[in-house]
Image (tube, rainbow, N blue to C red; front, side, top):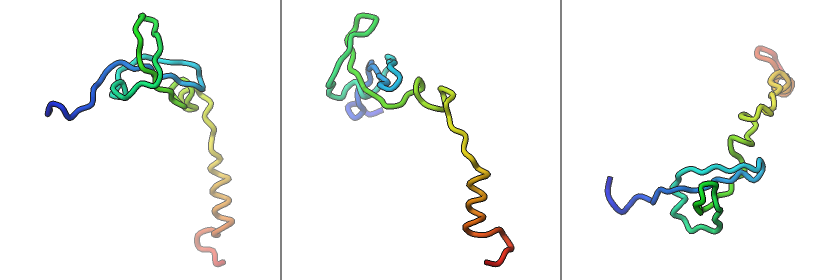
Length: 88
């Protein structure tokens, strides 16, 4: 890798506002100008990135995913465009 062209990589806290959870990980966002910092459980101060959705609040991972009514969608399509082989 060429030196001097890659962003820095360091610890950052991602905070999910909708679920009220946060987790510490490493990211290239650590080198961005920090607007806010937080005191973490280990005593260190880290930059914070607020996210709208994480695995703690995503419908797929929380089990609150909606089931899509595919039969209703197919029937609506057939009503609109007709069934194959049918003359309009």
